[in-house]
Image (cartoon, rainbow, N blue to C red):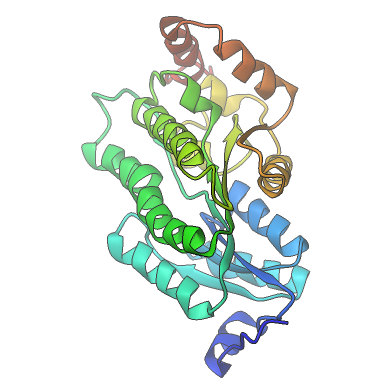
Length: 282
């Protein structure tokens, strides 16, 4: 049994005190979509949770997770695009007192449309959240995990990482970075007790396409999508098994990822254009 105990303030904020038999996990981007379903997977498998997101939906999501699991679920509402947001989340992890058993680096967003037409601030926001915040948080938690010689990290990449993203140029490039970053760290840490797993979903039924202004006028936005609960379960299972990567979703997504391995980049860019160009959904 762990000797970890919570303060009255922590108990009041989260609805439950940490229990010695439960390990600690963190999920970013946990207010909805794949992130919420990943948090649910951890909770169902007897992890206590710190969940992070920047929007007000996080408090509602944390309350639901808490009622479902009966465990500790601590929401940390922060903007991870800011260094201060990453530091605040890391401070909450350290304040818990237990070693971090697992973290799902899932926070991210995208933007559709032509690169020359999109606002630069929107494109830089993708880089700040998808890339920079992931690197900052990974730097902090991986040092602790390596020192403890134990820990699991799940990075939400995408099958978009495998193809040039015409009309999603910065988003796809950010996912390519995450895929390469994860694979490099897998090699660096292969002789430690720390594992990294890449989750590569295809188009999934989340708020992503609405927030990226792609829901109504692109082929990918109007087409059927994978279930986020299925994708999260596949990611969680792969994480627990210590796998390097898993393609999340159904058969269509897995076929698309497999086919992309044999396609030249020019063909993949042309294929992506047919899915993501504004007007392709009409």
